[in-house]
Image (cartoon, rainbow, N blue to C red; front, side):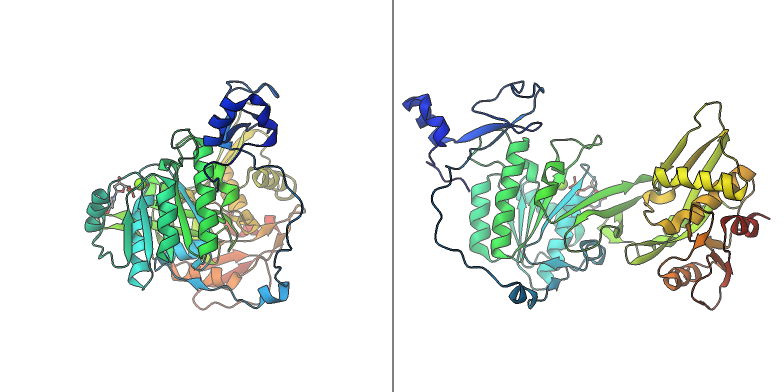
Length: 469
Ligand code: TYD
Ligand code: MG
């Protein structure tokens, strides 16, 4: 932290006594976000790399390093290994799932999302359940008054035990409260509304956001409190939003809406303490966010019956098996380079699958546009989705629906072969739970899920024959 009265770096001393007094009060520099060059004052254009509007206020550089100090205490790695990581459940199972199994002391989590998506609601509900479990939670409300938060808590039917509210926008008293309080968790709603007295810029400016977040994170690590920073992103994914914080936090969660299904999806895009392919699925109700118990059923609810181009994939979303619908539309193209568009699956993977379909399964797509979408805003990052994508594309091209009671999963190789994927039995059990009676995948370990007929194919063309003929 910058202490008031910190003297400016040695390079700034020649400006004369007046300026020095000024700088001593607010020792900040302006750093180009493009090339890293620093300037003593703000300029519209960086003199070094000529980029416009790239200078951002930052705390001034510390004085040059002096002679080496006394040795610091080191910790043998073996000593560090002995301490098992303890997880504390927040009480919201879907949040804990996305965090990788609960909170870790000192973890810093950024919760981003568009305004109105439900970030404050989620944080308040998490604070309530942590408090109810005996934790102490500091809820810093920098955008809304304590009364507004109270009204929301009332609407949500919360009791509020163990949760302290602090309605403030200045960083320094918040740090002081954190240091004095012994809190299990601290929520800052939102980081863009905070202002440090050490910087002259307005709340929400990149320099402010970054400085406040860095100070809060450093203190939380020291105290062992879990820290949640709420940040808004605009529809355009605004640059001045929380993106600038992604590197200084442990975990980045994005809260997104799926309007067609009235769902809220919480996903980790970075997690030092867990996987990033885990999603939490919520529903916004009149009494706040409720976990969706059976997401597969919700994702399949709007599936068209007997429509070409729709395949059900038994996917794995993190640790949870999830059935999702993959939709494809193949239409004649007048373009020399037909379009390939993928939402929810990797576009490169779609190109590859189109090539494999053409070469190894006799389905020429060179005169067709191909659009693929995964229903429900789910992203299928695993190759296990290949078979469902290829089947949906082939079904749309043929104009024939796939059998409604079949789920499929499996990786497609460049030689047109089908490969077995991990956790097949978990996928099959989920398929059975959702009422599917047949599953198609690559031959692998013998699996015998009761109530489900397992079809296997060694090659993509064999699989498509089973599905479409
Ligand atoms: P909010 O948590 O304030 O969103 P954010 O902090 O991300 O801006 O709430 C988002 C919306 O949720 C708001 O428009 C009202 C609605 N809502 C409900 O439908 N039910 C509820 O119980 C609550 C608290 C909010
Ligand atoms: Mg809010």
